[in-house]
Length: 430
Image (cartoon, rainbow, N blue to C red; front, top):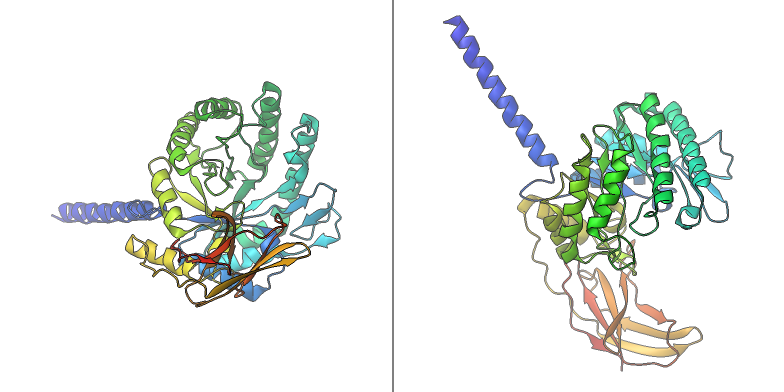
């Protein structure tokens, strides 16, 4: 009898454990029924001057939004003029522009239970398609030195909070398609992967390439074959993450094109045992640099859900933080995560009036707002075409825009939009 009771008790514990495990898996896997972000990027240019209090505010905001992973970096960056900046007190790389934002990031992340992936190094000359394989190999060597410094400074202090690495170099479907460039890319990846595997084998590496269907590069099937070749010759480990940008925000892909590209990339990832496939949702609108309407973001999540294990955002602090943009971007997203749908925000009131005047550097369009409460930002139109989107940032609401492309005033109109993407009626200049 005792053996039977013990068996039943053990079986119950096993079933509860499985149920708990499955529940945890469902939560991490984009919420399954309600796909959502489990991670986000944060770039140093936005946060390098944050004090401890600001870091803790942002981290708590991320935690409340369900963010479990934060990608921060690069730790070392070099611009096209050779100017170097580091986000930590480097002894190997002498730079007048050094700060300690990585330490603040890790400290605040530890308090909130968020795991941090650190980008190593980046050089803006990466975007020059004529750079040599030797130049790229040297950059990877620099990256290995950065990793060694970061491990020495922070790993024992922060433990698992310093969770992994981000490969900052963004590969595309245009500039890396020749055989020579692919060989250079393979060697570069292996230079970092082999070193990181030797010094910190349990810290995963994530990378986030992009694609542009409008450029004269590889199509979706060609890009799949490209990555199959790269994966076959690189030493990615079990747990590393391939998390391509969905390119909807930057305009490289139409939303309707995302399924074909992501289905092909998933086929490529499936050829590399242990490599994970996640999605990087672009939550902005290019070229305006404003937050995307949440209605579009939700559609991105739904469209990519069949192909990926999880989602990260580019980028929650930049485009959802109530300390930076309208609070509805954060509040409405959390509502969506809780209810499975966006809240019904009322259409904002239009501006009261619009005036146009000629100034030295173009045409100034000014407006008088009717209500700031629901206004996430403003659309400016000229002769019926959208020419600019502006948004509230840091509590400041724009009330004018200078059209530098125009020397003669046309018909200008201004509308108001909210976080969901609802737009007021347009008001013409008088």
